Structures are given as structure tokens and as C-alpha cells.
Length: 159
Image 1 (spheres, rainbow, N blue to C red):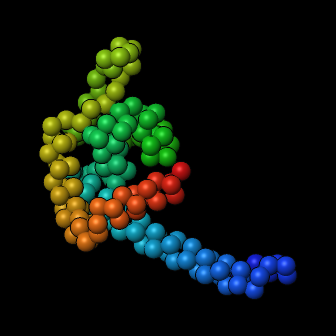
Image 2 (cartoon, helix red, strand yellow):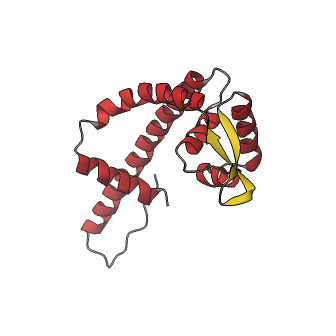
Image 3 (cartoon, one colour):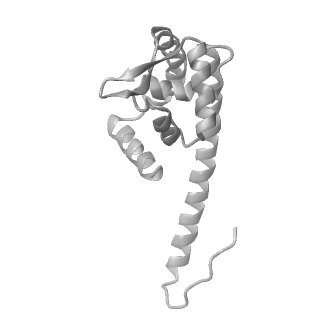
């Protein structure tokens, strides 16, 4: 890591603070990378639990639909930050597997939205139970205030 040039007018301790901050940022990046790798493995396992042919992205699409966060293709693309063709393929597969249905939007009869089937709800509940058992054990060691603070920090980082 290349150090930034020092400001000759700055107090000597600023360089130490900057170095400590840089080190802390590198550690956060490293730990986020490890966490993301574990999450990807968990998504792959959860997808296989829902259906052996389901891809991790398909699982994420299904969870977005199931949670009501995204029930249209456009909303899913926005939420998952992926391309429309990938979402279309996943929605088609989810429909073929009987996990998602397309229904008319009650607010706009011309539009359609996707809803998870009862089968999807059952299978996602099973997949989530395994995942929540693993991560839940670790998170239960934290206080509710710590968890809220962590969630706020993640939200801020994701903006």
C-alpha cells in the first residue's frame, strides 16, 4: 500500500491517524470479502435446497418476490443490480418450477406482478432455517442495539 504524501503543515500525529484509518479500511474490505464469499456459498446451498436446478441468482430473485421487495422484473433488476435478461431467465425458470406465478396488478390492470407460490414459501422457509441457524447463532451473541447499529452501518455503506 502506497502512503499518501504528508502535509508539512499538519501535526505529526495526523500521519499516524491516516495510517491507522487506512489499515482499518483494508481490514473492513478483507472481512467484507470473506463475508460475501460465505454468503455466496449460503445462497448456492439455499438455492439447491429450494430446487436442485435453481441458481443462486434465481434464489435471490425468489426471495425478493417472496419478501415483497420486488415483484416486477424492473424492480428485481433494480434491487439485485443485475441485467434484465438474467432476471427474465430466472423468472422463467421459477415459473416453470412452480415457484412463481404472474398475476395482474390490482392497481394497474395492464401490468403484471409476480408472487411466490405456496411451494416456494415452504421451500424457502426450509432453506432459510438452515442459514438462519448458522448465522443466527453468531448474531445472537450481539445485543439488539449492536445489531441495529450494524444494520445502519451496512445500509449507509450500501448507498
